[in-house]
Image (cartoon, rainbow, N blue to C red; front, side, top):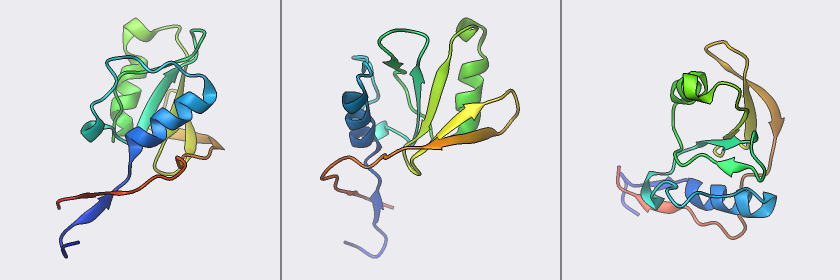
Length: 115
């Protein structure tokens, strides 16, 4: 590993493992492997629950999506796959921690990325 390289957390691997373990449907249009980020939304308004097709690295993007008029009446779980924390949107600019979950996939390897 070069002095400038760093390890990238395998968010896609974690998210897919979590969904499989919990019976959550993953849409065909889910993020490409190299672009999965730490925050994922799960639509719990439908049965079975459905993973949103895009992830984000910013909470403000998550809040903007939840507040969008087309999502009125829908309920989402917000999962932080970096820290293993479930968050909740309460109408304020900050998300509140509500629970912890195991976010590490079995046998996961960290991927080396360039700086």
